[in-house]
Length: 144
Image 1: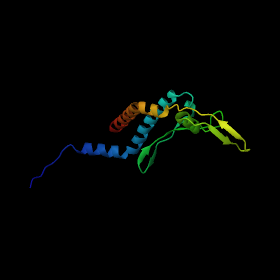
Image 2: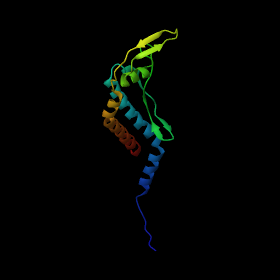
Image 3: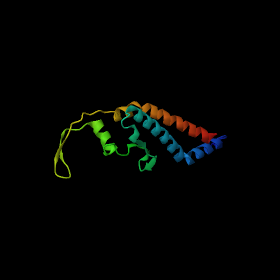
C-alpha cells in the first residue's frame, strides 16, 4: 500500500475557513452593490417615478438571498406610487367606476409606456459587474 504526504495545504484550508465564516456578510455587500446599480438605472430611466423608488435591505429566505427595488409612497393625487407605476407600465382600459356617493364617474384609457422591464434587462450586465466587483473587494479584504 502506498502512502503520500501533502505539504502546504494548511494555508489553503485556513483561507476556505475564513471565506466560509464570512459568506453572509460578503453576500449582503454584494447584493447591496447590485441593488444600488439597479436603483440608479431605474431612477435615471424615468424621472417621474424616480423619487418613489426605494431599495429594500437584503433578506434571506428558503431560496437564498434577495433584495428588491420598490415603489413607495403616494403620488400628488393621493394614489399609491406602485399602482401609478403599474398603470404607466402596462396601461389601462377606459371605463367608468362608481364613487362612494354612488355617482358614476369615467376614467380615461391610458396606453402602455413600458420602461421598468426594459431598463432592468438593459442594465443586467452592469448590475452583475457591480456585484462581481464588490465580491472581489470583499474576498481581497478577507484574504489580506
